[in-house]
Image (tube, rainbow, N blue to C red; front, top):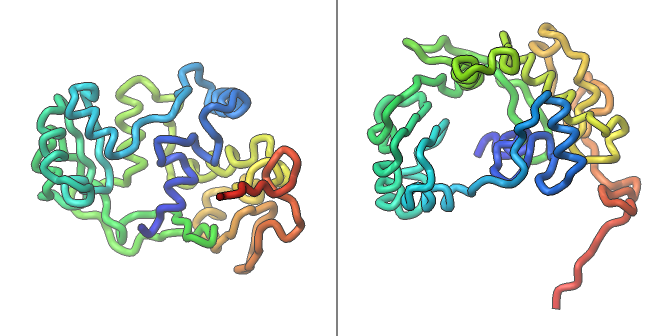
Length: 244
């Protein structure tokens, strides 16, 4: 789980939008829709991993795209996962390994970069975002995950929305999203407003940053949350629930 927190921050979970915006909050939905210039933003949470494969078994899921994971091995009840993938009419798998238990069940396999070939960011459990810099060239036709997503999106007619040429552009957009209605970092805990002015050179030289980042941190710092007694609630106070 080297980047579990980073994946959650950018909306990698089925039950949240990116940048810690929430489903079920009309203001969040409006803010994200306007930022992405879309009128078709999802209005409710998607299926969790186990529920997804249950739905696949029931014939409710007609296509699935699996990236950077091998669910036949990593999820419980591997036979059920195999059966579900066998029933799904169209299975796409992006992986850096050609032959896995999951790629064997795929209709299309897209060659992706391995960890040492990727360039991007990761976030650890102390909220620190660090640059991951490529150290090895990519073999064969292996491509970055973001590039694969961009190319597929453009082929599906979303050229303007996915007009990225460098992963730093995606990071900058993400930073801008965390700052929406959150210029002081008091509306939501995740705020990267101090990184919204990064250019490609600045992104390339980015030092580890611990959020909230209200201004660029040239040196590694340690900051604890809630030391000012302010919490991310309507009243600004902590909310405790008594358990009997």
